[in-house]
Length: 202
Image 1 (spheres, helix red, strand yellow):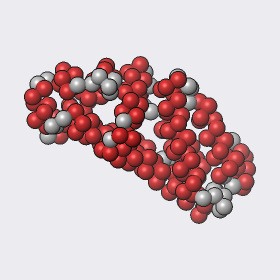
Image 2 (cartoon, helix red, strand yellow):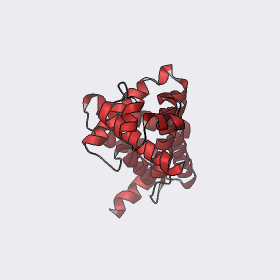
Image 3 (cartoon, rainbow, N blue to C red):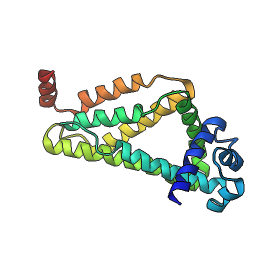
Image 4 (spheres, rainbow, N blue to C red):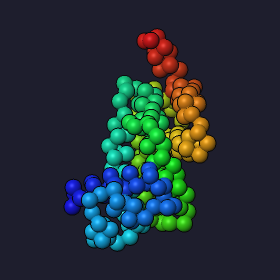
C-alpha cells in the first residue's frame, strides 16, 4: 500500500490547504486523487482514521528533517534546531494555508485523544533532541553546568510552538522569536568561554 498511501497523504495535504480542517470531507480528499471515495474508505474507515495516519506521516517527515542538527558545539546545534523548526523547507501561500489547517487540527487535541497523542509525539521528539544536545553541551563544557536540561529543552519547545501559533493566528513574523531564542542560548545557556571562543573565530 506504500504508493497508494503516499498518494493519499499528498492528497490529504492538498485538501487541507484548499478546505481547512473544519470543512474537510473524505470526498474532498478523494477529489485530489484518482481514487473514488469508496476506494478511499477501503483504506481508511473514517476521516478521523485518515487524519491520524496523516499525522503519523507528518511525524516521520518531521523527525527526518530536524534529527541530527549540524554544528561543532551544542549552542550551534541548538540554533540549527531552532532554525529548522522556524524555517520549514517550503514557505509560500500553500504552506500558510496548510499551517492554518494544522492549527485548526491542534484545536481539536483537548477533545480528541488520537490527535492529542500524535501531536504530543512531535513535542516529545523535539524535546528529546533539545535535551540531548544540552546534555552533550554540559559534558563538553559549552553549556553551563547549572542549567537544567529538561527545563531548558521544555522552554525552547514551548517557545517554538508559541511562535508557530502566533505566525498563523495573527501573522507575527517568527524573526522576533528567532532573535530572542538565540539571545537565550547565547546569554543563559552558553558558557562564557564558549562565547568568547565563538566571537574570536568570527
